Length: 383
Ligand code: PLP
Image (cartoon, rainbow, N blue to C red; front, side):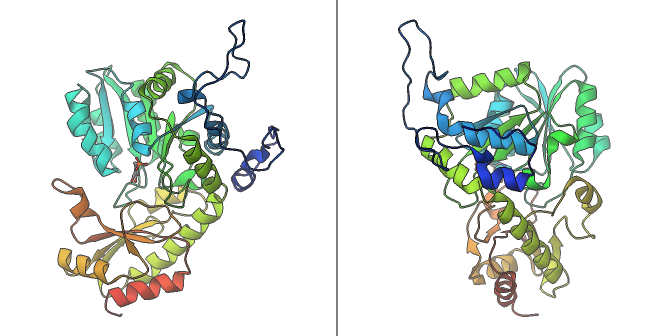
């Protein structure tokens, strides 16, 4: 393997997958290594440095190293899903530790926090997104150990200032972990704004083809907290299979082109539909009317991402009817794939959701944007 020492740009890092070669045949693509175990020398040594596949599968090395490069971290870990990556961080807390998260965030994680997390003794506070004063007020000196942030936040795409959260975390002596799934490392690098850990549902943009469930964590420092996270992966065993790691790497090679195209398409759609007679509001941080636009413009470079939501005039019934009429957009959950998806989030999230009932979440793919506009136009009944 050759490790490229020159600091390369993210699109080169991903396209070349660091330029690593598969050692035995000099292939430009790695093999798939299914072995779960590795031979020990007669003297007891492990000459390959690998013991057992739960931590040491060779198919993890390249994607983890690429993620370190993209996020400017010192270490990275792959997981079997975004949720297992997030839980490896949260389960590093001790009963009685206090954690703060924003009110709008990935719903399943929030649900876990208020149900299982609470029953395990994690003391939770949720603060309104975009309200740093509320965040500061929520800190419990000596008790607050983890600040969890997601920006843009699913599904209303509210924006939080990572640097401001990092300042609060540092003052509290807490770890700041940022779910960077939606922005991707191509558009935002949370560690450079002061975060300690970055989390990805690699199921989404990093893979990009809706055919792998995967998660990742990247750390700024290899400290005691990260040691606990590593133990959680190894002992918890929520690891990725070698084939899935290989597929993830294949997807990551085109992430830069996909994210760029999805962002351009999303911005075009947001601009087109925000004055549409059938639309109450378009929620997209790339629009100057979005309350978080100024922070997003500073924090995100190269685009505002491929996720946007539209609030349909006429309420929940009208939103459901519009979703039913869409043809190119597939009615499915998830995001970050090459194909565009639509989802009525409130009915998926259920009781207690902060998501408005008239909201349709759109994951914008890499199709021709004119085709997407026409599909939405016909679903909204023309202009
Ligand atoms: N974070 C965000 C922002 C997500 O959208 C999701 C899944 O939709 C997750 C985390 C969880 O990831 P996974 O489905 O890979 O477990």
